[in-house]
Length: 458
Image 1: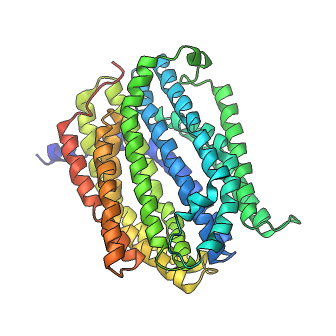
Image 2: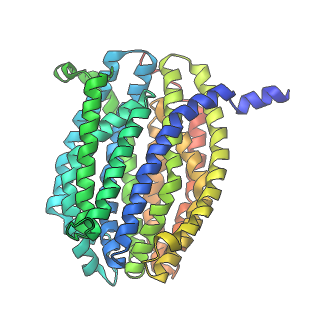
């Protein structure tokens, strides 16, 4: 009886081994990117609270586009993985074409925000901040230069995500490592003017990113030309299956809208937090997330592993197997989430080391935020796993219910807290994130309805 019960809630060693082989390289890739981000943050922090705050608010705006890009690729990736499971080469190519067409349609908006309306957009992030104008001067300079990485980022992400969706994660990892090393080295050279180069400070950080992203894109393009993966076929752009394109867009639109609502609410809430103080609040909050990214890598790993494992089973028509895999992945998520809480607590020791150049007030805010974030990790990992399961079967309505509706509630809730209380940004953040328990309940109800148990490639 005990063995039956164990098998019901947990998969075999081979099952978890296959999931780990997919998830770990993705987490290592995310870890390297997070380390680069942390090193960037460390180097910029040496320039003071104001300059770090300027880079941070630019990053928050650029993050909106990254989330949208991820949503678009995830929409196409739902079908990519299932067609891969069904061994349907043409279907994979149509999924890839969807990513390309929709992603490049967003580039014009990206250019408008970074090149034309950068200061106006950035000003929304520091309403009420006592040092807003100084922060905006720094942020505007950085944001303008970030406009020159839009195309490279889109191309790299489309290719990398497609490889992940078919379970080929090693080469994208190697390319990311190489680009990360270049970025880190150039940051050291250009921000502070080492090796005889001019001291460019914030502009140096931007130039380093531009060069690294360009190299990354070139390497991805060269690799696909050599590897010739099944999901790439240039002829597909002359014969796009518009019926399938519309089907992907229909399901993907809910995902894209839900992610847009989520990231918009996150940006608004961050702006409200930023308004409660000066540059120390902005830089302290930013510093905490730069360190938190070291354990946020768990999201990308478990998302990819869950999507690939369950998506392949659904695409191959093994629906009962997919049901079992759902339970096994959720059980693993609970254990993994608890482990990441302790990892998060341990990272608080990095604050006085990495951010010794920041003010004591900024360091205190950073440390407090890391503790709050760590406590919430089990909930977040569980939610990510739930949503990865539903997305694997194309049930994107759940994302709309979980992220979209809850995000709409968050903003008025936070505005009331801001207006009627004197809570610190950390306390407000914790109170807002308590709503995530509601997300878990909604997603669990939808999982039991099993609208995600669908073979989209049939």
